[in-house]
Every structure is written in C-alpha cells, then in structure tokens.
Amino acid sequence: MRTRLFGAAGTAIIATLVFVGSAAAMPGAKTVTQTYPVATALCAKASAGTLGKKLEPKQGDVLMACAALEDPFPTLVTTVTTAETQYTNTIAAQHGLVMAACVTNPTVAERKACRAARSQRKLIDGSARLARSAAVQSYYTSVKSDRSTFWTTINSLRMPSAS
Image 1: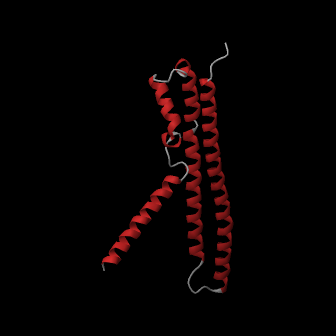
Image 2: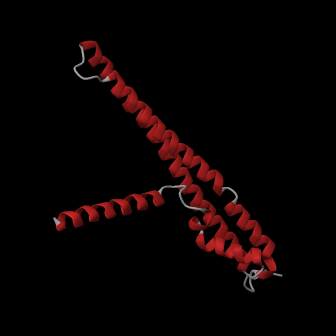
Image 3: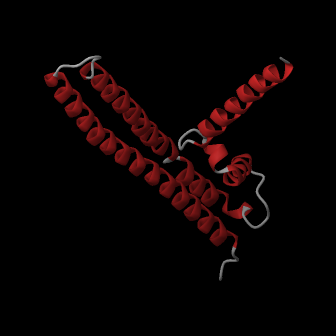
C-alpha cells in the first residue's frame, strides 16, 4: 500500500516537473529579462547611470543599444504566441470535425465521410504545424540576431576611440 502511494505521488511530482519545464521552454514564455539576462542587467546599470569606466562616457549609445534589443521583443512574443494559439485551435477544430464525422457503427457513406474528414485533418494539421514551426524558427533566429547585434555594439563601444 505504501509503495503504491509513494509511486503515485512520485509519478504526480515527475509529471508536474515535466509540464512546468516544457512550458518554460516554449518560445515566448520567457520575459525579456529572462531571455537576455546579462544584457538587461547592463541596460539597468545604464539607466541608473552606474556603468563602468569604459562605457560611462557612452551611456546614451548603450541606452540606444538597449532599446534596439528590447523594443522588438514584445512583437516577437506576440507573433510566436499567436502562431501557437492558431495551431492549437486548428488541431482542436479538426479533431472535432473528425469526431463528428466518424460515428459508431457507420454506414458505407459515413465511412467515406469519416475517411475524408481524417484525410482533410491530416492536410490541415500538417499545414498548421508548418506555420507554427516557421514562427518558432523566426523567433529563435530573431532573438539570436538581436543578442548578437547588441553585444557587437557594446563591444565596439568599449574599444578606445582612435582620436
């Protein structure tokens, strides 16, 4: 009895951890601070006026680089979240259509309708999956590009100017 209870509790805990971990890994689930932790810390220092000696004279340029990093982020999140929602809605709608078309003890005509609904679902679900994958790829590509551009800018600002 005890092992069953611990086994059930252990299974529940593991399932919770898996679902929480997978939700955090979804694109668009993290905030800008979680996505760019070191960059946003530097931006906070720039806003507070507590930059190091190499970047202090170029505080305005650092703030512009921070804006270039942070401003497009909400749009990226909205785009990938919208794609995920559309995908989920499409899958649910197609499932409902198949369930409505595929009845218990079908006639010959109902079997054909069921096959047609399943075939249609396969095509539409595949198209929705491709659209979601494209949105996720675009999100990750943009995040990587924005991060690279930010740090390239900051590193160039740290270099001594050739006067």
